Length: 496
Image (cartoon, rainbow, N blue to C red; front, side, top):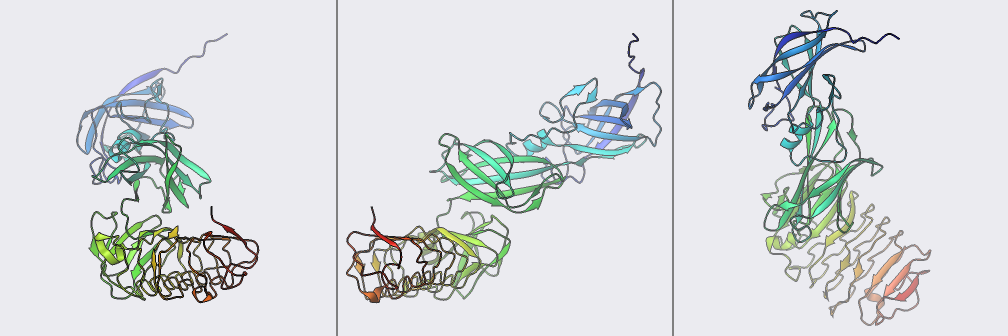
């Protein structure tokens, strides 16, 4: 049997000058890569499937700068000699911190890039150092080469109220695509100190450039010790192109005032003349509203004002959006909450006929004393609203304060719990409140007073009669079902 002979080789000295100019994903925060001690340059020429020439060059100058010189010997097949126009491929191989270009076999680069799917970098600089894939192609006789970053970076910064995530809290951070159908990355992260009231988790996911398009993507934090989901945030659609980075800044209950959370791209506008301030950094800095605020999916904008009555004034987005936080910040500025709404018609028609509002389940109506028409027609004709606030907890009601509040909201499936009030002034508090809410299947009504149809005129007219449940306080009595009583066809039971 004949032995298989390895081809004879020879060594060829080679020197290359390299820059990383023009890379958006960089270590120095501008547009260039800074070379580090220990960086090497892999040079190769392939003919068909045969690597005819290859080798690692050592950096001899340029550490700490954006231009470096590499020098060393290339291993070349004995029957091959490179010409000036011989094509060559170059790959920058980092030092000990490089996690994608370590393995070699027989002097050959074993893999061009091994992108991680179960670990994150702790910072942008850390990600560039560990998971960059700088490459270029040229000719053997070229005096210099310009490397191009082939990686794409998704940079996350999420701030959390410190009471919910003390320093050192461990989370599993998962990135999903296509409305949760595809898990792109998942790894553990830990909260660190941020301000006196907040912590933050910061991490960077790295992808091969051009390999992934984010569509209906999200990032979810699950507390490792309890398994409870802290929150899930939308990520704007994007193509994760090579030589680029995308920043995702989010917050969780770091500002307790009124907030708009964008589901889609849109423009937030304020109608009327109310003086309003807004913040795009979760309440750290504020600026006066002067014109529309452009938002993308997942963006969160905070608002405050000392306007005493909004009446027909509104704050909406042209794109789909949710609302959260205490709306009292629109009346009391930074001193909310403060007990009572200051004026009649305080939020009259506030979201009326808003087709882009989807979810108000995290909106807080904290004011305990309500004037006349306080929330009258608040969500009137919000035809795509699926959930109202969790509860209506005012203790002092005034005339028609909740009248028409959810009128003509056919998509509403979750209504607020109506808590017991201690003071009932005038009448008509609940008139037409759920008129034509045809998708609603449950109402929890815990207020107590002597029934009078004047307070409930047509409040459940147009509600689906196919078997919902009406929970009430044991101290409240209603007559036979009807448009101004309990819904026809529903089960009526005392709330436990």
